[in-house]
Amino acid sequence: MRMSNIGVRKEFHESGKYFRVAAILTIVSITAGIAGFIAMIFVFIAMGCLKRANYTLDNSSLHEFRSKYIRGFISRICGMVVLITGVVNLVFFFFFSTSFPFYISLYLPIILMISGLVLIYVGVAAEMKAWKNLKIFFENNFKMFPADISEEAIKGCDKLKTGTLLSSLWFLIIPAIIGFIYQVKGYFMLATLNKLSTYDAPESTELQASLPKPQPVNNLERKIKFCPNCGAKLSVLGKFCALCGSEIS
Image 1 (cartoon, rainbow, N blue to C red):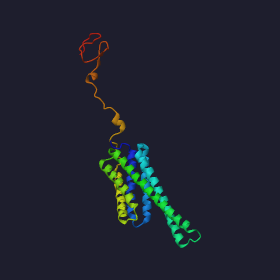
Image 2: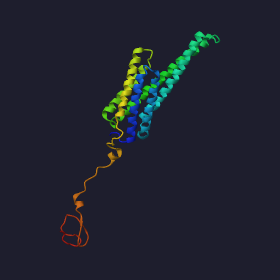
Image 3: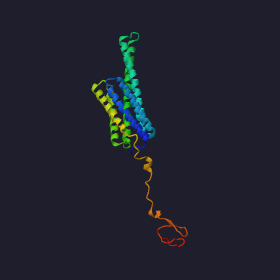
């Protein structure tokens, strides 16, 4: 059964538009780092569209996608802050610190850096699970969308899941580049949701599917008459009124 709610169709259509913008900005981020941050904003806007669609759909996989992605994003941001703090403390220790014992000055930045890396990769794992949940949604609701859009969305989620992992290996140049390409391609694949028309009438609805088909009226029932003499109800089975005996023409 295809998507029947015009409001839901519109939200998926809009999310595709924002995923496309995110893909373009991700490419631009190669030369302008701020574009990568703006791309993330558009991803969150797209997720807002999916959230509104889920008010109607009430799908657990769609809900988990958004919640896990947000948790992953927060964990990665916190991890970056802690990691940078650790690096700054390490630099401060080697060049400026003389007021603290050696073991305190050295261990603190190392602990911070390790904690930051742990938070970052916990966030990476959560984001990968988020894309997996979105893939599950499209797989379980394949017939809700045109076949080509469902297939592209499923492949896009796979690309983004793999791209998230490879991009986290930033210290390995080749995997990081491949991960970047996968992420861009994944966003563009999800952007095919923009092909959904917001004006097409629904092909079918659950209510329409559950209603019995109208049955043809029996010809005998349509030919029921009344006796012109006594007014009794007649059928076409006889030529005389059963009540008064009058002949029926």
